[in-house]
Image (cartoon, rainbow, N blue to C red; front, side, top):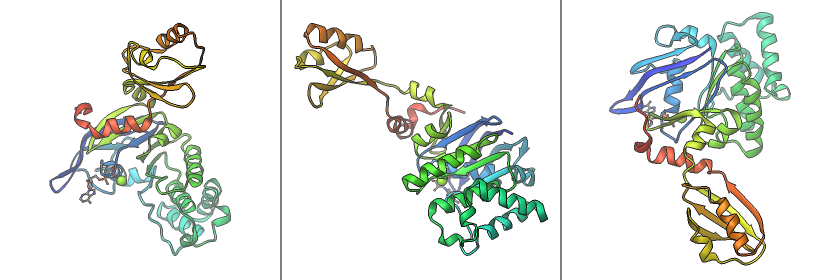
Length: 312
Ligand code: ADP
Ligand code: MG
């Protein structure tokens, strides 16, 4: 089932939290929704899950318009809201049974489904504990379990890994990856590495506007301005000459005849460096191009939005 937004706008007072955004997520896609705090991610997700109405524009979830068929949308959508609101004084099993009932499950079907989802989310040993006694990672599992109880085809997860320690993070990512099979998933984050770990398409939002929507590899390529080459020689070389090679902007000295060569990106400077080494009669023992860092690209996309803004 697909998720489509058409010119969607949400205004709070005079502020446009979401400003005429459009995108189309096809059945089975797992899409990372990336953007800094206040960009409009949660607002978009609240509209797609019928928690707030749009000011203008349309949201279609699984072929249903959220403004016209909110009950149908909720039947096919699982939603983990930001900050994972839970009833802390309920027991895990009790809470999931309660949510299952809200979705109309009863009797053996309800019992069976709660058991299934408890197992799937790795909650079997914790199911008879009160939610307030659980660690953040386990609470997040409960949050995912409640989003999945009615076997939705579309999953909307708002910052599902925020605030987790590194071990919990790995576990929750694994769980998301597993439960995302055969579902259409939109999950928000402000961590680019997370997108890389979980999906291949990314939609970047900044100040209520979509500033990028593509496969991660294309975004990486499109923003590969300049390059950094780490080079190691066997012995001493003429640093001034290295710096004056065509295409080289700067060199940074590292340890034992190693340098970071910053190139302007117009030409591949690696063949030049190779020739230079032979001219200097020194062996080249390392030559490696560094990938443009994900953080740099994220910053580039979201700090100078005027340069990249895509008109919808
Ligand atoms: P994100 O989830 O990307 O951090 P949000 O969608 O929560 O961003 O917020 C987008 C903008 O809308 C922010 O500037 C936020 O302050 C504002 N906003 C969100 N919800 C409300 C609200 N209920 N009332 C007023 N402003 C809001
Ligand atoms: Mg948010």
